[in-house]
Amino acid sequence: MLVRPLLIFLAVLAAMQATAEETRIAVAANFSAPAKQIAEAFERGTGHRATLVTGSTGKFHAQIVNGAPFDVLLSADDETPARLEKEGHAQAGTRFTYAIGRLVLWSPKPDVVDGEGAILKNGDFRHLALANPKVAPYGQAAMETLGALGLADTLRPRFVLGENIAQTHQFVASGNAELGFVALAQVMKDGRIADGSGWVVPARLHQPIRQDAALLTRGRGNAAAKAFLAWLKGDAAQATIRSFGYDLP
Image (cartoon, rainbow, N blue to C red; front, side, top):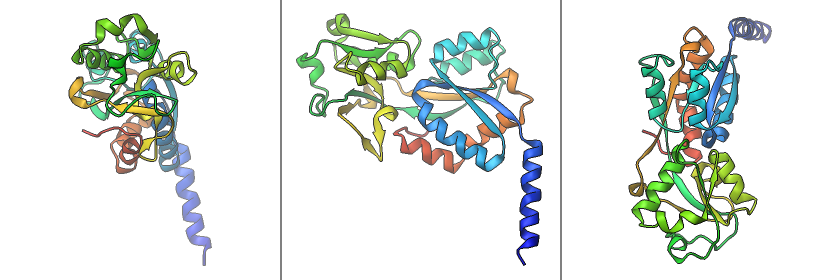
């Protein structure tokens, strides 16, 4: 009785494998963990393969302009995909906001960062890590936050700049900086900050960290790239995004 359904399933599976393609996706460093989960579910659900490369959004722009083999960009901002579209490196009409990032002032040690971020004014630390604001949107948001608090110039001598938000997190996690501004997604688990102590920065202190996705020119004929962007808009992917502390548009 089970032979026919099994044969149908195997036929469908074979058809999926026959039409499966691979896509290379440039992923902003802050989104690496949710992107991995989403890609795994995408591969199981579609048969396509998604290869993820993580890095800083600013460097991805330069690489894409110079011919890097990426089909999709998951940016840490909304400016870079728009710029790539204007420059002819991203397909018009494919941009959309897939997540809105949240910034957190974090220390891996408990009771270091208070719930109001008052430690920034108290100054009981030697080093403050943040991503390079010239290339990393989370670093720019950190600078806007410090500016809103009137502390940017005061704390500048204590800055430790990471190339991207992943390196910034590593500076803090390793103890090279006592605290730092990182993405909430990097320290959140099961709806709370998993280790250490942190202050989730109020959204009013910086411009929204709108993270946009876009189909790049190289991926315009790649079925897997288009399918991944469609999957990213789906309920399962959006549930994963929320679980890592991002807001949705």
